[in-house]
Image 1 (cartoon, helix red, strand yellow):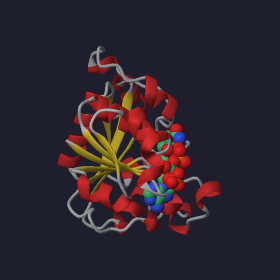
Image 2 (cartoon, helix red, strand yellow):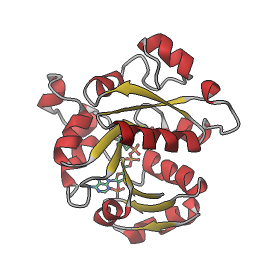
Image 3 (tube, helix red, strand yellow):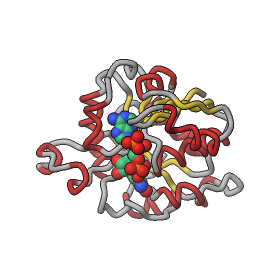
Length: 212
Ligand SMILES: NC(=O)c1ccc[n+]([C@@H]2O[C@H](COP(=O)([O-])OP(=O)(O)OC[C@H]3O[C@@H](n4cnc5c(N)ncnc54)[C@H](OP(=O)(O)O)[C@@H]3O)[C@@H](O)[C@H]2O)c1
């Protein structure tokens, strides 16, 4: 699959390595220029290239957005229409500034991204796992029930399934927390599942749902 990655930091860079290792084509972007990513692209290996953010959006059948939430308005919505977009972003006011719609709980951060990238199929995922754990805790040898869960939320079932399959390919298990609204709330910082190493049965015991 072709995966465009916007944000080449802790999460974007490490997700890129896992996707490339699983055999996917990766195009990765940061805010500066493709030239500044030469070292990272060599480290990622596989079929990977450095591009601009616009090119990453055009390239990906899946586009993985992993930048500070306060920067999402910098993304041009062109190129995202109809695409599956993985949203790993979290709201940290100290970093992102106060955002009234999030402070009042009127919206979730993924709903803000969905508003900005109109026509994209947003799936909130990879936002509850610390990058050091993303690097090391996937294990394809384990049966699904024993693997660490990566949570997914979204309004498009097919898009969520595609992302769930990708998560399983890199050695984790996927767990559906619901819509962008309800699931998005379940996955926010400081919730019971945030930054926790949980299997599907353990997550079910907390969330009271079956996951998939
Ligand atoms: N760190 C974690 O363990 C973790 C875990 C789960 C979720 N998250 C969330 O995931 C997101 C990324 O976190 P991170 O720790 O990976 O961040 P990070 O290491 O600070 O990296 C951020 C990346 O975003 C790029 N960027 C910023 N603005 C951009 C723009 N307008 N267009 C393209 N690229 C842009 C930066 O490029 P430049 O360097 O060129 O500016 C950099 O490559 C955040 O929302 C964070 O809250 C983080």
